Length: 134
Image (cartoon, rainbow, N blue to C red):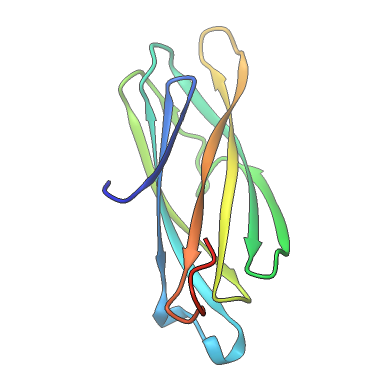
């Protein structure tokens, strides 16, 4: 993935790209929609499973919403060493820009140890904003 935001925690590499969805947005009504594609790569030596996710989504006015849930896109993927998992999701905002960051809550297959993996902060930019905020 080129131009992706990336971060690695405990040998789990997270890469994110966001895309403004013009066809689903209605700027005149304060509705701006983005998709984001995430790749989770297990670069370590242990099999891990993604159990939960936590997101903080902040709009251009600094209003934050917190979203938590089981797995991602209805799945709790298990990643053996060297494996990766990719998915696409999306979010709406009432402002023409914002950003997201979050955490994946993981568990190791062998010891059952739980740990958190940081999802890097990434910009949600649209052509409707006045100057880039991020």
